[in-house]
Image (cartoon, rainbow, N blue to C red; front, side, top):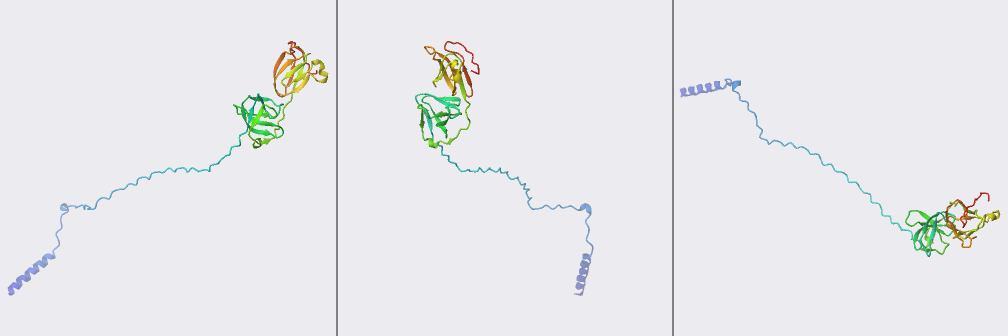
Amino acid sequence: MVNTRKIVSALLLVLVAGGCLPARQTPISDVVQVVETSTEEPTATVTSAPLPTTTPVPVTEVLPTLTFTPAPSVRILAVNGNLYIRRGPGTAYNTVGYLMNSVSADVIGQDMLSKWVQVIIPDSEQSGWISLQTPYSHIDGDLSDVPAFTFTEWAEASYVKNCTEHDLLIMPNEIYLYSLWTNSTYKNQSQIDPGRYEIFDVSLPDEPLVDVLDIREGQMIYLTKNGLEEEHNCPENN
């Protein structure tokens, strides 16, 4: 019994002594470097794409719709003949056109001091004036709807003088001009409105046509030829 205990005690001493010995070191050449492998899944790299550029849409301003009331239409019609269209409201102004028979024109104004209306010359963008004091004009519409104003540009006077020894008649105005020999009383000259005229020699039996004239504002016309086609001088002081 005693021997058995001695044996057990001796074994215990041997085990305790072995536990106190230093641990055996592993040579460096034998060390295996272990690289740890992550078990986590790789994180994906997210590249932020640029946001699309939005072009601003212009805002169209909605304007209110304006309603225009057109002026009442007033027209003048040439009846049974042609009408002169003049640059001003009077026969002393130049002719700028004609309103032919059965043709009408828009009336755009009227003169406050005379019975003349301003019109648009047919087939043009120009305006002119027509007299209402003639049986050859007819108004279609109400003239009270047409604006009235005063035309302030005065016309330049024109004159015609007979320098022949025959009496002459100017048509269609029936202006009678005596011969040069009656010039002391100025019966051989007259003021004349611009326009187209025919000159007749009334001192001859058949009253032949002497000339056709287109007279403009500011002119002084000297008639130097009679129905016999005889030429005469016309001194300015006669």
